[in-house]
Image (tube, rainbow, N blue to C red):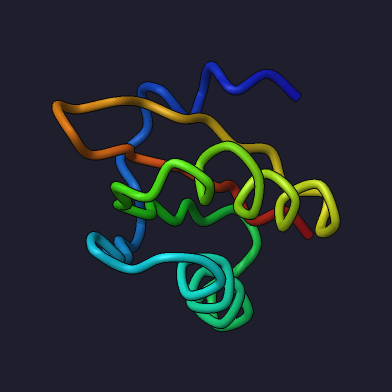
Length: 84
């Protein structure tokens, strides 16, 4: 699936883990995603480069969820679509 819809769609929930380092962003995102419904989008706000490069993409690949990443100043917006 293309990440294009994630670029234009507003997230259903936002998780702010700015200032947290691995594995906190991945663990908190996984916990939040378990509570969300299929079709919803989670936006993770982080400033931790390894989370953007390694752990969050790994989480998405393991779960089969598409994702998109946007940089907004010093913060990354990592959007994840929960699929059924």
